[in-house]
Image (cartoon, rainbow, N blue to C red; front, side, top):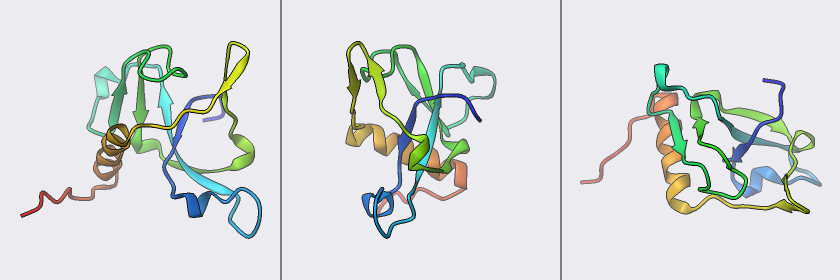
Length: 112
């Protein structure tokens, strides 16, 4: 993937140290606006248009395409005259975690 696209940073803040002794890399889940309906799996997490300001069309977080990228490849989304600095809600991060667990083949424990 070498085109510009929306991503969700899923690595912990301690891993995301942009300047200093950290790895200067983070783990991201890319989004796509191409409907994966023919191949939809639990690793494809839907986000309806308008869920976030930077998601103006229906999109899917493609958890099977997770990757590590340099911070130099990241930029905020330009909306109007400002840049969006949005944070996913806890429930949306939970949905992405479920998608990642499916993509990696990790069982979801159901508590006892």
